[in-house]
Image (cartoon, rainbow, N blue to C red; front, side, top):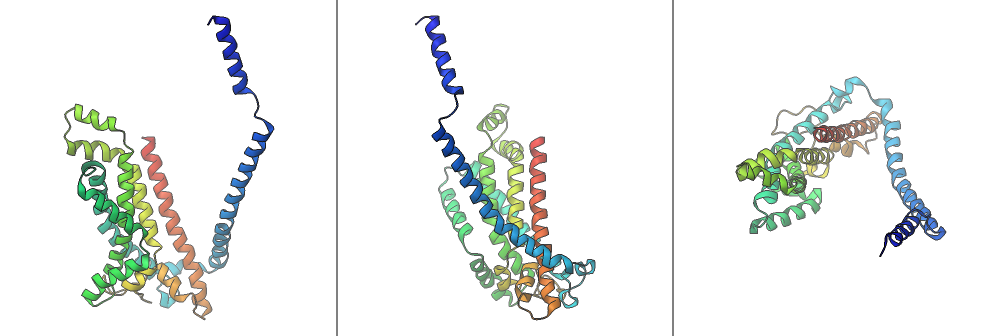
Length: 293
């Protein structure tokens, strides 16, 4: 094959690559794009309508003193504090255990017989309804201590957060290239040093995102807290007493005939949405900063 034939072949290939698509293909592309946009709008419209309804009904009742008053005084300060306490307890219990478990599954236990069992149990935990978690925490904590408490609520939230942290940590570590592990080993790094100084450090953005998403999910849970922390109209006396929370406040007062309490429900919904949105924004910012470095 001489040069003229090669040039002819290249010209024909170039003509095929840069020639416009047939009208039938173009129509099919436009049709699929239209269907995709239509389904996207169909999914977004209910979400926007819910957010708009909450904002319209709740923003008029939002006052600064509500953040420091209890439910008795038509505020939600005790509910914010209770949510923060129980989510913090859940985070303290689940984050270290979840990250270490994810590291074991991704780095040390890939071929270990226990790893498949742990993954199986973790997968089951992600699909268990939250109300079942509440019943479990009720049997483990409430029946033993004979009291509803913030500790019981934190334990229930930790059970919900744990599988999310484990799975996201494992996946984040698996995304780190093997070349980095080999380079560390070539420089004399031990398995422990390679894992915690190289692999885990590189995977911090993914791990942080998973942790913050787990925290955001736990902050909006209602059913587990009904069986564990119950509720309190006033400030709680400690970690071993019934504790108010934002989701349970909304659940308990939604059907209350008192107009002030009904307004409090919508205002509390704005605060809860704001807290969840704040956590998600922080997770995005942390991820972007780590990637930029």
